[in-house]
Image (cartoon, rainbow, N blue to C red; front, side, top):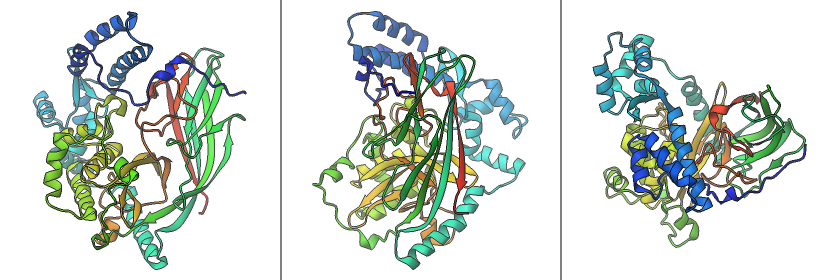
Length: 476
């Protein structure tokens, strides 16, 4: 099949989608959950001939963004009560109200009706201390299998790094088998479906020897190395009554990376370099030095000047104060780092952007990295970052994994200065263009992990397809 690259005026739409319009009343309607009113106002503007094509597309996305929020908030009060009753048999509406007011049960009022976030009930038992204790009382306290695996594995990594006097140790050869399946008949018969799948990127000693094994189409495009989102692009023709599958098999070698960060080795930054300026600057909409950032930074950092100690203070504060919780789609959040500091919870990407924002505000260069976590029997999407120290260079930082529950200090702090071989790198930045260019706004406007799909009629959002991960460990 011949690859078809569509060219359209819709390429005017920028990759960084604005969460606010220039219309005050529309913004108020959306922020207040009056989506029906916002829809009517947006429809009126879209049908008028007084706006540009670019603004037309931006306003269309505001309608789509509300639809995405509706998909994220679909649970009823009964759904929450049914879930919670396993642990609190006598739960009442007053209990729900108490948890809502405390910020541990997430909901939205949309057009006058209360809808709970799809993961609000499970998040409650991660965020609320009373609920978490009750769950442990009923289910028993369990150690996570990944935590148990990492305690032993990372200790070995640290030991080998010291013995061999190198940050790169214990290579792991893996084969990723990835499949994306578009539901039957969401695209008309005979139409071309365009698909971008995640592809491991070469990164020096950290990730190397990437080899495509197979893909279920003889025509494909692998993105150039200077593209921030590493993809393999391919197309399929939709067939009536049948799902459309995109299948990929790729091998790569991941290598553990570990740096012991000694505060005594801190060197003064060269603050006039282009790289320093770039990675200590604000970047709208998700890395902004708000008053909240400044106030929290003052509490965390105080008078500390040593960049390694500042990074450790930020890392530990987030570890201790921002618990992990399932998150809404990033495209629906106006400012991710501010959302985190206002709700005091977040998933891996939210916590990463919060660390990056606080680090940059304190003059420490920090940047995004993400992809997949492929630990044995624990596969998932994952985000982390990197931080720069003069005299050392860029080192990994995984804020979401946090401090390990071990006695050895180096292993305890492993993920500030280290990362394991099972973090498969796909992206070295966020909200950048795909290659080839995507015509319509991405389903994930910040990250790229699950893939992206569209046809000439528009973007295919996550509710129209699913993805499947399988990993083979070739060194075993």
